Image 1 (cartoon, one colour):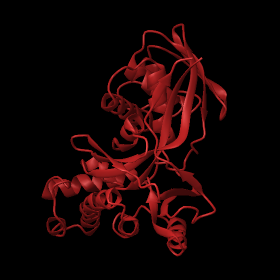
Image 2: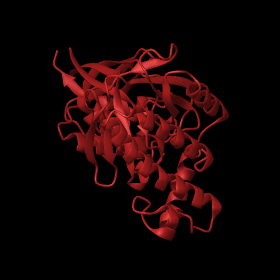
Image 3: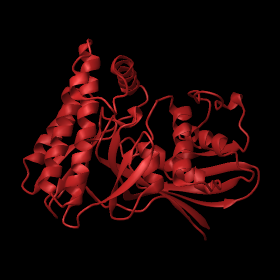
Image 4: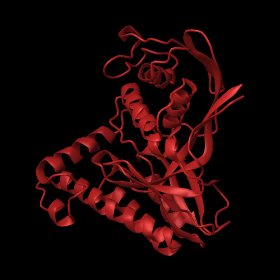
Length: 340
């Protein structure tokens, strides 16, 4: 049986910069969504270990199904994870259906991009044959339609274009991708803190606040801290200061990893978390406590929340075996299809 395989992702640094065309430094990780499938018929039928109710959809989805221009309406497609499948089907517009089964060891609601991984794997199973960039753009559109959350393209792009042994320095304005080697002596550890979903979270409000900042001072990817400091509204000013500072930290962290300076990279991760906590308001008390505990552990160079925030996971950069809890994750290649 043919398999479509898509990894999860963890972001080392650069959160809430992608939807303003800024810089991010994620890596695809060795946790996967897999779809074992046959191409046949005129429907998409997928079962899953995580839900007893299968997804069963036509190839051509009309608005009454809940997928059309705009957002998949809650309840329009059942089960709930079928909304992602439906949105991808409507973007790919395949001519042949599939029958298959979905498995995943990416925790749902942990901020490790389980939904983006499912979208990318689904698109490949349906026969999408474009570039990694085109695959990411298609799946980002599907994410927007399935959730209504105006997320950036980081998740889908790193999952589609991951490079073994490397993080990816992504410019989310022109989608340029530069692999950055993760030193062999570095260990990346992810610890789960609390379940979260971006649907219904303040994520969309943060996007709107960044738009308000850009209406006042221009693109944040080009702005300076001095320009951001002139913004009149204190909340909008704080959001802009985070984005400007975070873009600079991403550049510096990529350079530190490239030269093997794990101390500097860890320090920048800690600074990133403080900015997300204090300026962007997307951390939680539990995540702050987890980061503080990690940073006080011998052998930990630095730690931060990762992903959209409001729960999820923290990520630590450590010496080998410095931590005995959490998932040690390794940078892997991007999504692919393996013929059966």
